[in-house]
Amino acid sequence: MVSPFSSRDGFVDDGSGVASHYGNPLGEQRLLARGAAIVDLSDRGVLTVTGPDRLSWLNSLTSQALVGLAPGVSTETLLLDANGRLEHAARVLDDGETTWLLVDRSEVEPLGTWLDRMRFMLRVEVADRTADVATIGSMHDLLDGPDGPDGSAPLVPVLTSHDTALVWVDPWHEVAAGGHSYADSDRHPGHDWTYRESLVRRSDLDALAASPADRLAVAGTLALEALRIEAWRPRLSTEVDERTIPHELDWMRSAVHLTKGCYRGQETVAKVHNIGHPPRRLVMLHLDGSDGVLPPRGAEVVLAPAAGGAPDAAVTAGGAVSDPEATAPKSVGHVTSVALHHELGPVALALVKRGTDEAAPLVVVVDDLMIAAAQEIVVPASAGAAAGVPRLPRLGAVRR
Image (tube, rainbow, N blue to C red; front, side, top):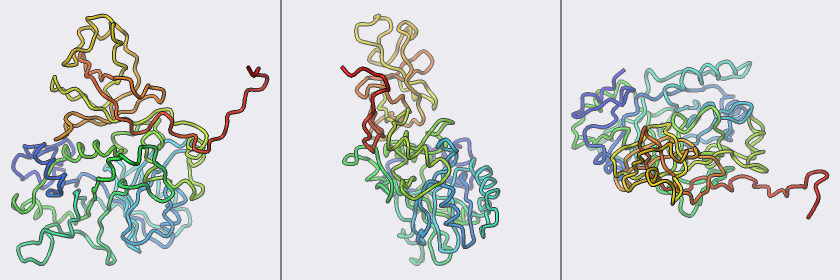
């Protein structure tokens, strides 16, 4: 369904019923970055779990420690398969009586169905609240104003349940208790990531959309994506494929508790973190924008042709290559998200093989064009092996 915000001037549908932008993506991005705009995310889903066993039950199934989660405290959790691969992700908020799971719309049916099957004899009930509750994104606390015309209430009527305002504050800005970050903590852009999602009644969306632009500024999803990429923030619907494990995306930072006990996939999580290495690693790419081309999600990332290679295969100043096949470039990964940032220019997140040289220049292949890309390391090649267990020589090996 198309959002009520489609009535706003300049509305351009992103394909899911909400706005990709309203005519000025970079201007909207600046407004959003400084906390002066909201993002309509009414295409996303909301599940609830009620009952006295809800937190201990979810704790036993997923990667985060949820027992004792205090009302109003935000966290996130992952549902893994038996091999530790990512299947679902949920942003979690509890109000003392109900646990609210904020998910992408495509997650509502499969996650809700799976959870319902896993209830057994426990005192829990799973419900889909997407039809009556919608999500609004922002970089500021919508409860703090600005006040409405009567000076008594915020313009955005955030939903309250059991005396708890339903505002999920992204925990990405710091390493969660029990978590671990592979990224350089001193320079992590997540420190400045103030993103949050507020729940509102769907019945309030029409009035919100009709608010004067000078009272309630709106930004599209393109603006939010650019800021998310800048913060190195992974998302299930973009960064995850059928092989992804949390370590590859540095999602151990906010969604995995390493000492909470058993859950499905926990053995792989512990083994890779303590004695192994994730097979791939997340990088941020700064793309050459000379040709004005943004690569699509899934675009191949390859090693840049070596200096001194065939002249007709070298990357030009604009990133063009007349014959990309001439040097048979080595594929090392793929783009997962891409955006035009209002300050950084064209940027992307990409998953590359762990062994890819961290200093190597890369290029992104788009049809017959190769776009030069500089790596910014998110997950280093050294990630994992935290236990520092020395490798034993193979039986029968000769020590030299």
